Length: 418
Image 1 (cartoon, rainbow, N blue to C red):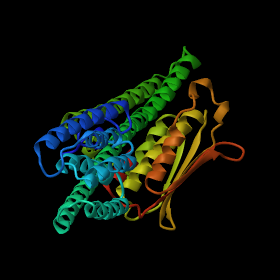
Image 2: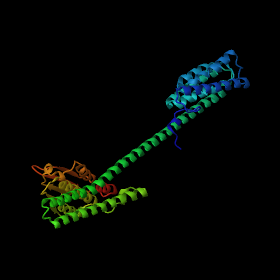
Image 3: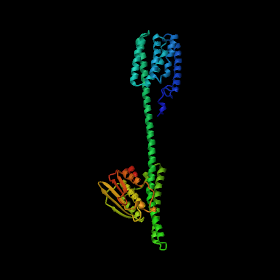
Image 4: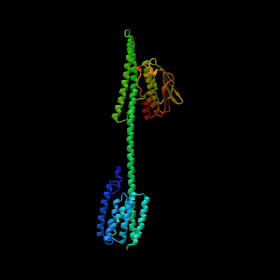
């Protein structure tokens, strides 16, 4: 059973208050008053010494006053208690009446101090006991054994309580750290899930929407170029391309939403329910989609043996985003070259265009997005690198190197697919 931190701070009895607080002082004052009442009863009923007179009552009652500070000042409270209890025993008053006050003060020192201080305190008290016992007309051997046994028992009990509280405190701290770790992990998973959904939507929609925008511009241009001599075949082809692109985008979006919904309803991570990852075999389809948008795409793919699925998925998404950006920002008469091959144990791909960039017509331009950031994240997810930037003179170039030795694991697959 785990206890809250407040349950291990106070000391028994009257737990629930921090040592030194007003509440703790009030509790210890009440406790000391009860012990004093018990001492009066024992002094009147037990006959193991002289019945206290005025001096005896003064020493007996004053010996309980320092117990009010036994938690906040344990060592001074013990010394002050012994200053009254020692003379009380030396004079020979009823010994049972003052024993418990010294034991409580000794327990407070043992439960609050280190073992070394506890040991030294016990040794000093035993030495004082020898001196006091020499002044009392009683059997020295019996008294030495009896009092020494009580002192050792109280010190052992107080040390045990201290060690037990430290153990409970450490358990509570570990539990709190574990809880904080779980909360941080939950927040991290939420952030990753939000980023994953954003990437999925970007991957699924940005490419298709860009193609639809370009194809619509082509149809509008054909309609506006020469209204009296309409090229119906060109318009019909552009509209068919738009319809095909919309159907493909709708299908991909539906599949993604079904995966997200099924993962949420089952309580599992959505990523684990995904189908086969896209690979470099699908890059030809990406090139064909870019051609329908009016770009001239030169695809050069060398034979690459044993491409891990995670690397193939990352390459597919990078080429998809690069072609989307090229079509969106390249302008009219765009020529794109896609080259894929193997070099030094890594899959090297480059997407180079000769687009006009900022000189493109307004319909082909879009506000800056997260495409390059997403490509770099996908490359890093498999231990690769990616460089993207304008070419000297004209155009834009994206170059990525993805190690073919990337470890195939579920987390890596999910990261690359994103």
